[in-house]
Length: 306
Image 1 (cartoon, rainbow, N blue to C red):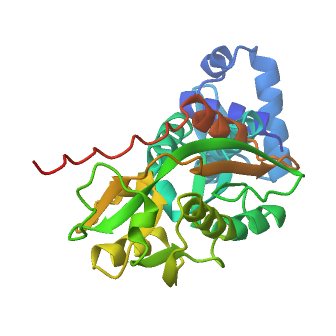
Image 2: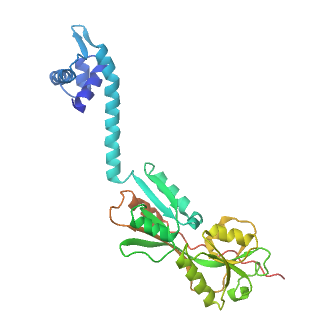
Image 3: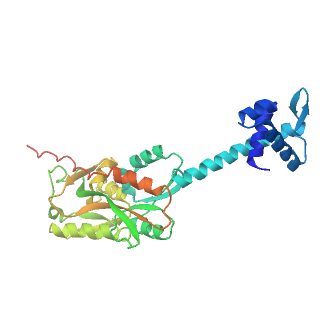
């Protein structure tokens, strides 16, 4: 039994007339009749009652018709799916991200990708940068968005975003309404840092930024998530240096003040491995390349009191 036998059968079952069925199938009547007999022989049952008055389904034929329709639908679905996978229009993508990507355009760009590729399943996993690089190496992630520049040579990457660092202060802090701040002004403040264990790159970069501005920070607290940093600042626990995008978090009680000139910036890299590239990944990468995230503008500079 072949799929063509099923197609011929369901058309004849619908028309109940060999001539009309043959016309719909763009064939002559003899080969249609021959194929139906082949199908009946392979099943070992009679599917149609033939008479001078016409054709009608037997009880066995009526029952078989439902199964034939279902099998043809499943075959068409399987064929469509195979073609979509080959074309990269459907598959599963496992995407890693650091939490601050929520404020750096990740949701918007993923939504744009999903609108263009609705059959691709995107699975998001929040991990720190080192965990993402390790997961990509183990083929547990297909692509990641990381802060670290410590990326193995066998991985591909491009810079997705570069933005300034800003000073995050409690709204009651004397410097919170300044136009800008030099970090050495904060020598007596308790600093909250993104922990070295969660991101060695960020930890070292912020310490280097402080040194650049003549400050040896009084590091009192280390946390693993940027939102925890900003939330603790908002509660008056300390001050911090954070990527400018975090001002989008909307945490009440925290103020973001531009730093005086600094060469240090917060960078996000898109990282993946070329080996066994998922068919849909190039399309996802194109979305993030085609609409690169702009460096977030510095927050408005508060006016100095008159």
